[in-house]
Image (cartoon, rainbow, N blue to C red):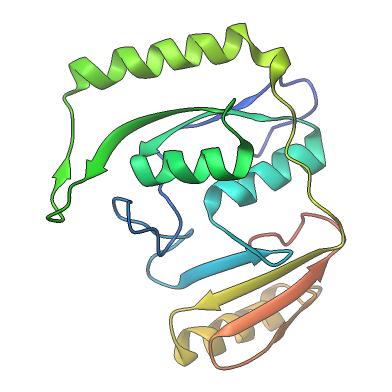
Length: 183
C-alpha cells in the first residue's frame, strides 16, 4: 500500500475508491476484494480501504489524506473518518430505486480538478490520521473455505504474520507496525 510514499509528500489523494462493504449508500461497496474479504475493524471501529490507507499514510509517513473521489457513500465515509476538511468528490450516486446516476465526465472532471487544486493550495491545513498502536485488526472473510485457504497461504508465505483465526470466517491480529495492516 502506498509504495514510494514518504515524509517528503504533503498529502495523498485517493482517486476512484469505493465505500466499505455494507455501505447502503454506495456503488459497488466492497473492502479490498469483493471476492474474498468482507469487512475490517481497526481498534474496534469498522473501516474500509480509506481507513487502511489513512492509517498507513498517517502512522508510517505523517502524511494526511487530502482528497478522495468515488460515490456518495465513499464521501460520507471519508467525512466520518477524516473530518469535513478532507475534500471528496462524488462521481456516482445510488438512487432510491437502486439505479446509479453517473454524471458525464464534462461535469465530474472539472469538479475533481477544482477539488485537487484546492487540496494542493490548502495542503498545510490537513493533519495525518492518527490511531493507537498496537493496532487491533479484525477481518471477516467470505466463507470458511476462503478463510482456511487464506490461513494456509499465510502460514506458507508469511510465517511472521501475527494473526489468529477466531472462527470460520474471522481473523484477528494485533500489530505494532502497519506491515500486515491488510492481512
